[in-house]
Length: 287
Image 1 (cartoon, rainbow, N blue to C red):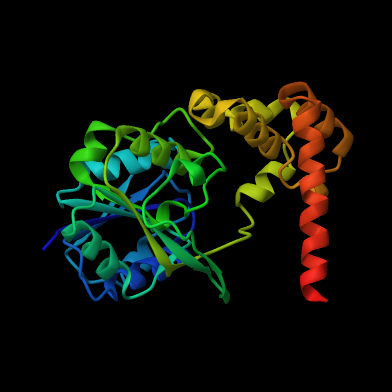
Image 2: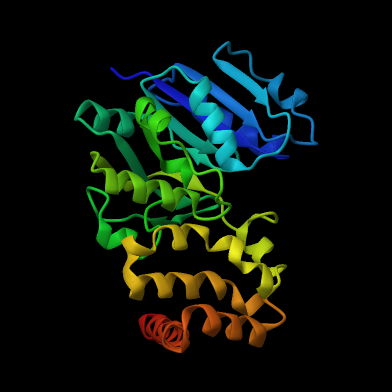
């Protein structure tokens, strides 16, 4: 059997943490420990934590806010299990989540990702059909899951921690590095957790408020793995990052100019061409 350490990162969302903690405690395979890393929240977690009388729950508050990857790395260091499974405070595991991950580790996996359903819209499913994480999927972006569907052996994460310099694409960066390292990286191609979309403080909301001049900080993971991506996929990824949530931005023309400046005319043109194709395809499927 494998011992699981669960690391939950949280920031100013005690109500969400209550839900995520309940989902961990409801697992068929029970974890050895649950480490909650609070990234220096201003909100109080006292009331929520008082509802859980379980010695396995360890709450640690960061002295300063360092971001999700800093919190995850601390969680790994504080852990003692064979495998570390990550959960964001706003997501929820289904009761069979750790069953499936444990099965893969007993079969020889070093790291695992998994499919999910949309929290609140459970009929919507996102599952990659891969059985192992592949370059074909990775060059297209993160077509697997966020951190709430990821686990890895602790020794591996100690030797290859999360990149604390990145504030975007942290999960994809980790997946690429694991793939390039050649470890046994397995994809569970069924939905076993619930992912919460469209948070008020989520990525989309933050990007809509950005200025084109501030976009560079979101391009770190793509630039880091430019060689892995190759020029075509690198420019495509850059363009997608720049034009993400374009319809909700006020200065659309400025963002399009920024995409042309960074990714080039062809990549920008292809972005809009593909968007039109997707829209036409969705209309025809409805008809």
